[in-house]
Length: 488
Ligand SMILES: Cc1cc2nc3c(=O)[nH]c(=O)nc-3n(C[C@H](O)[C@H](O)[C@H](O)COP(=O)(O)OP(=O)(O)OC[C@H]3O[C@@H](n4cnc5c(N)ncnc54)[C@H](O)[C@@H]3O)c2cc1C
Image (tube, rainbow, N blue to C red):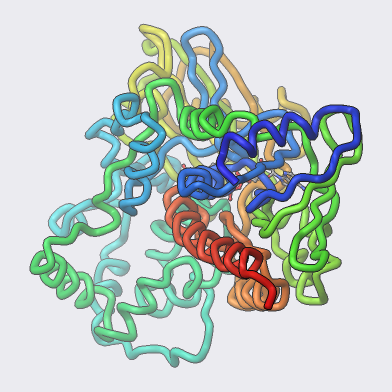
């Protein structure tokens, strides 16, 4: 069915008169970046799609808030252009001209040590000179090539892996703040093979991370390939939610907001999807396929699919608060000349870290002001998200005053609370992914996509969504061929 039919069908659904339920090629559950990318790709290939979104807006974790001349990202602040599909999607959405790349100074990152932000060394000479690591830690790092490979059969946590290969200080002052900054997680819980599969691969292939980096770099040079860390970071002039909003705009009435899917089941060769609409009416649609992009926070919806779903329900999403604070530039002593600062848990602060938002991108704060975004909670300190907004703001302000030499009070404040922020790929997460594959095999026409499967970054989620859209497209085509075959 062409996209235009899907749109008029969606409109029909909202009407009061009972009609014969239309059959879509795909019903997408959830209008986060995964659901919208898949709907966009399938629609573009001529399939009819219906996207059902529970909340009153599209974008899921991607949310931009504008208040006067302050522009706040409530979820992701930057996307790394690590996969070609990311650029392709932006081009297809017609947003290439609105894309803005993070400022060059974003390469500099600070880590807090002894209560002071210290620049992370970005080159071997800087590493030798830095005060971020002790001489003992530097010597320990130099011994890394002599440490034997681990047994590849035994899954390790990030902490076990890094401690074994690079030493405790490197774990405490580099990896711990990095994983709490990116994953809102704890290195003692996260699985290294799930979160840093490349590191495990390098260890197994070269026997050493340091030698692997050197050899890998020369191999990449031969293949004219860039490392992932060199991929540019970007946003849009009017904020990151431009991408989901534009994708949804182009899909038109094929996206229904305020519609919570309450159940779905296979009926013959089709799927029946039940949802309550924005007016709280129970509705039902039929489709050849269903893609679940709703996240595992609501995994009880999946329970009827089978016992494997117990594993999915056990995935931990820690709470997280994002606190955007605007200050007069003159009140901040620190030059804010970088991406931001990360706080190792060993430093026992209240914030996990802070982004120098107005340094990263222009147009985030009015003239003469800066915008800083602090993070509180995560797996490290979930209890820090308790209490009202005033308490959370004070917590962040107290830490920032000290760390960034701030004299006055903030002149702008905005708090976003995520009760279940980011799925933790903890030890044993491979079984969660296997359960998803098993469910797809058992329930033909059902697919799973989203950050609980693809990797947590926006770019990994887009990359995976492109791949699965192809699989879904082939499935739909095969179903149509069977349906259209004349009965002998
Ligand atoms: C605070 C924060 C900061 C982040 N920072 C970065 C960053 O800087 N860079 C980066 O790359 N990534 C970052 N991420 C991660 C990234 O934003 C997410 O992993 C990604 O956007 C998730 O997309 P998704 O489509 O898988 O899920 P989501 O965005 O969670 O979308 C799922 C959607 O499904 C809907 N839904 C759920 N159940 C139902 C139902 N039953 N019926 C209908 N709809 C349903 C939800 O309402 C939601 O809109 C951050 C995440 C957070 C929370």
